[in-house]
Length: 177
Length: 372
Image 1 (cartoon, each protein chain N blue to C red):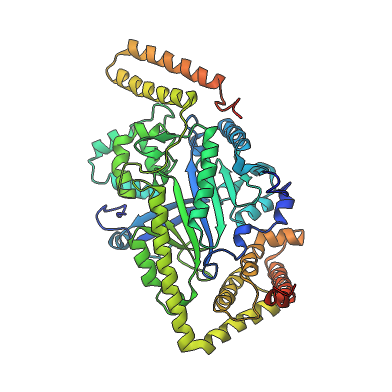
Image 2 (cartoon, chains in turn purple, cyan):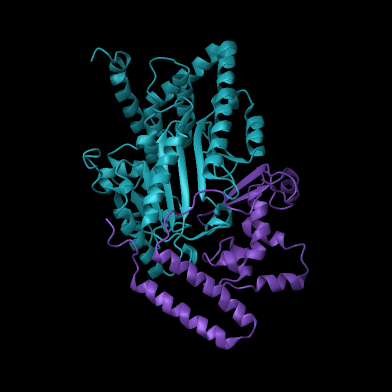
């Protein structure tokens, strides 16, 4: 795994910070740790995931940064700038909404961006509907970008219909033994 | 099914009378590895992540999850506790038992924990992620702990719509957990490597292969009781099997290093080692006032002695139990009321002495197991 600051050297220094009962982890290389003054002894030094994420966009010009910061998740309303501050995403949809910003971040954290592992086995009506709603949200965003408001309104209605349907059958596994 | 687990815990008080099975001191490599743990992070597709969700949405998560758990065989006869219905000391007890995290233990929002009938499985609801499934096993048992967690995850998933993407895998509130959502870890006791001052080199090499090491209770750099938790670091681009396999390989290597260090110590400094062990035991057995930190460090020395095969000390399970029951909330509960710090140290000493005296009484029976 690579350093979360420079993204070049392997991360050999690992910090767990606990603040207000929230725990966050930071993984950096020794050089960056030294530069940031993050020695084990300097435990009072404030450094958290938010700073790290803020550091990620240091290379950007301020207009780029402003533009990225204003990207918003269409479902939960989370701003990318808010994610940068807290290190927490707002909902599953945020992964799609911020995909261009998240991809390099995921690469820095994990050294990879593609899942290799377990998948949910089941694909019942509820899951299919959820994926459909997800796709429609994406389509809606594109329609709004094209300023095709008529189409956007149609998609919105369809999303509402599916969401009502989802609420009417909250428990897809009901009836199974 | 119920015949296999005839006696599930009925309520919180009942739960406390049962020792955590993963602290039994049994299991492969128990002389070095205390326990093995798997944690899976999952979220529901339709609800914002815990920190962004409204309380009524979190109530909904609690209902969906407990509904799914009722149909899961893994959680048959489990015990469901709602954090906001527990007293602060009770919540702390769960934290001290490693059943819930500090975050879940705050007790303000709709959060809960479902504890499997035999306490090897637990499920935190509305922690940082909607679901944090945890399995624990005594000693070094990665495959067993994984199959327990994996099976329970499959069963829960039958009734829940997990947030999942083909590309990124299981979607989690913090991107550091995205992908498998798996944190596999072992809690390992490395006194010889610490005493011979080889531990830094070991920890560095572990970190270099992408694993994470931290002290048991240390929030900062301090490691107490020579106990270390080693876990996988990354969750994306590596399957569960690969992560666990790597942890297995590295842990075995560390076990080998510690064994060599122990041999060397016994060859070069047997008397000093035995002296340290017995002095530690003597202090624990006869103390009248003692702090948590001292209990942890002295237990480490005694644990070392047991692992080296010195006879007449207490079993590993007792040492494990002491680590849990001498913590503040457990003491307070055992005592039946608030304790000032000085009183706590006295109460702690009493419990330690009692436990060791009990173990001494059992000692002749343990040494002649076949005659009973």
